[in-house]
Length: 367
Image (cartoon, rainbow, N blue to C red):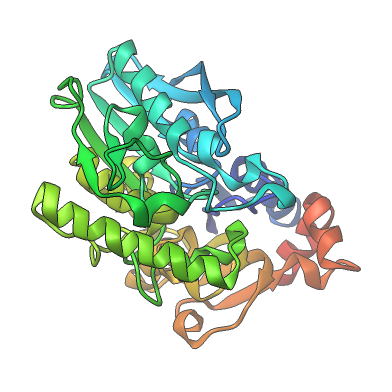
């Protein structure tokens, strides 16, 4: 019997490498003769750097940057010297996990720290930068990142604006960098969602509330992102409002398209292709995948959706271990069985705080 384990992390609970190890340990205890292969995955958000290092053998680089509220911090990214490639996880500088619940406010947060990481990687000699975007605390359309890279955003009086969500609607002019140091850098953006930039399924309405936005702020942020796209038309002669993934990370997807000339691709697919996961799935008896919350978004660029789609292509059963499950017709046809850790715990909080305690029960339930 050949079993593939290929989950994402359970955000705020357990990383995907530790999760794979725990699931494998339980499977082997039940079926010692089974061939069990572990493929921890990430979609571009939190944990992306860890998975890149796991598969690519990159070196960690620590550098000074700022958090979403502009406070000085040290963050790390991954660097492959042989190919002059930097792998940057935007969440390490601009992520929601860096803020307390009281500090969350997408009016004030910025991707400026992510731009500083990019600058550092270019100074180091990077000619290709792969930026994982997800888990952001921001809804600034990438203007913070762009500001750190030399762009300026001016109001009607010609004064520079602080690059944050609150000021999107006030931008009157975009000033290009004096230096052309971005010109020969190849940018690839690993993106975990397909949302457009604005509108009812855009960055502000779908993700703004979880970043601390009030209903009134959500409307204003959406208007600001729509205004930013009109500026893209004026200064860059193209709109990216409807590009799949433009709304990722509070509109950073759109900002990367415009300011960096980047190419957006699913972060999960980038890793899946590198490790040739489809070949292993095609020869397996069944697959176990998972993430913290399985819901309708799970099939919109997330790990579970990618793995399940490949498995169904090869007519392999897909079993899911997750923290919680919000049933939806949009994904049920892809999944043969979904087991939640919270169903074995006294509370959801208990399953989040001590997932290793409940993983054996989940594996036994599946097998």
